Length: 158
Image (cartoon, rainbow, N blue to C red; front, side, top):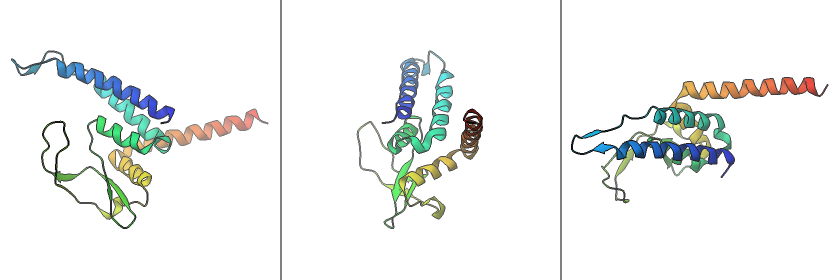
């Protein structure tokens, strides 16, 4: 696990604690929460997504998938028996009750453009499709920062 993976896990756990406090405030008698849903839940979600998008090549693949599920998304890694992988969220599934694993039927439709030769490429494609605007923004910033760093270093080492 990389340091970036660990930093993301810290934020995920902080978000989980805040969500638990909110969920624990549910009053069954009035069928409502006694505290409002904290804005910090959404702020942390956005911060975590930014980190995933920004550092995707350096993060462990399991960290990305597990973190997305912690945020409420449902990525599924599929294999097509021809050496290709896809990460898909849309599917038809039977309803799962409780916290224990159960037998389920799942059906996916995968467009050809989603199949990639590696799990890493499939995850990258999933993230690009997930929020193309955020993906472009974070990668544009990384590219600009790299250009500036190289530019500054060229002056320092003259």
